[in-house]
Image (cartoon, rainbow, N blue to C red; front, side, top):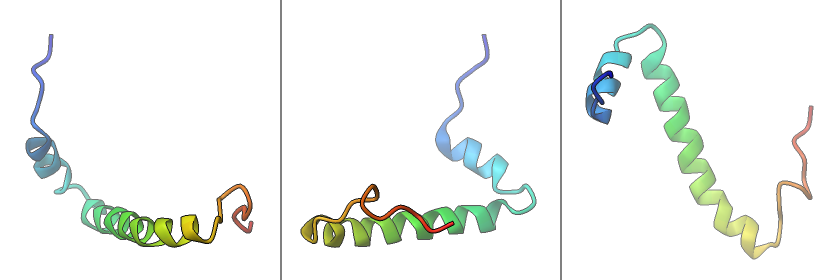
Length: 55
């Protein structure tokens, strides 16, 4: 059975891969945006089902 790795250890290994830092930053920005918008959407009673993404 393989040993379990700590999150920091996995992140340190993966962040060295090409594009990983950029992907990590994009994920952080998306999370922060969602965290900011969610309360506003709830107050306005907006929901993703009411406003599907434009394709």
